[in-house]
Image 1 (cartoon, rainbow, N blue to C red):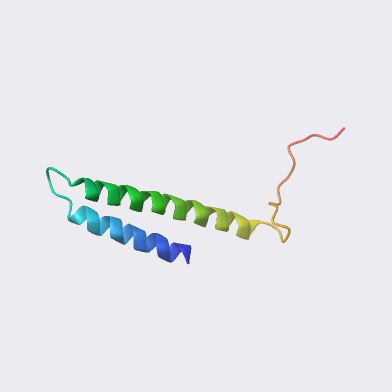
Image 2: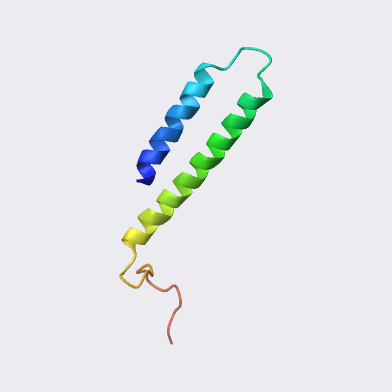
Length: 71
């Protein structure tokens, strides 16, 4: 579902930028772009976390080798 939201946000940003005036950008447009980009960043972070969790074991911990040397 998050991937769908990311695509939707990217489309909204592209649409907003297509209406961007060459000069004197209204503050409301700047604010809207800022909000959309922030939401997009959060959605991407969340998707990355979900991908990491999918690679984790059933207990939610990543399976990795320890860097500690045993004596």
